[in-house]
Length: 283
Image (tube, rainbow, N blue to C red; front, side, top):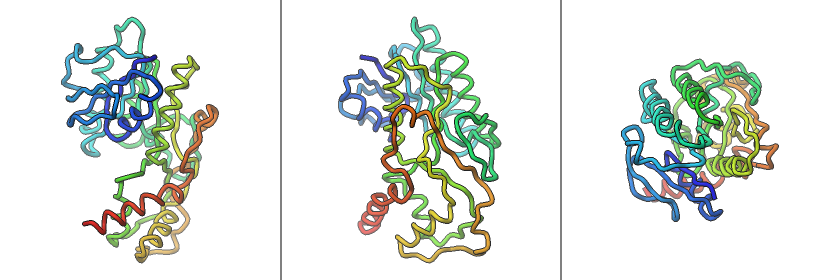
């Protein structure tokens, strides 16, 4: 079976490893800190950027799943572009080039007036952080067979930031379109891509991972506020129609039989709300 390296074995990477090991793959995971890895995953602890080439094993498939330490250009460059350079240095001379899956973001699409986006839409980032993501995609694609896995806003277990903001009474600001994907659905999408690669299928240069249900941010917040029993913080109710953001859908994964377990925020936030309430009661 294929040897799979998960470069960035945090939440998503651990979830992926947990799914791949029972299928018989040889899975190796790297994480910056900590020594806990899913059962069956051979773990390496250390900063990927500082690693010697000899510390990185040969691999057939590599998932690059990094998390920046902040939302600055420097943090993104360190987390994404610099780690990509390590992979290029180490693996460009491997006898058979590995298949790379780079976990990117739909922020590389700069549209923000309600446009519909899909995998045929050219990526023209508008922010410095999304520009680094696009630069990283291009760097990897220039050397390896690479798929940029562009995820919309990821939510799921332990990700309470939006719920906390709603409970805090913070003003909601202007309405906008939002696109979401549950963490568990990202993992299942990555498993599907692994299966496609192992089967020798021709892979596209970019794949969008989203729940296929664009929705206005205020709709999400109104529903969550009702569930949390808090008063909506809308200063101007006349702005209910979104004036910014984009509406995103992806077709490739659907064509390969993948279906999201949580096809909308309503189904996805049910268990998260229960987890959040239990966590609050324990605090």
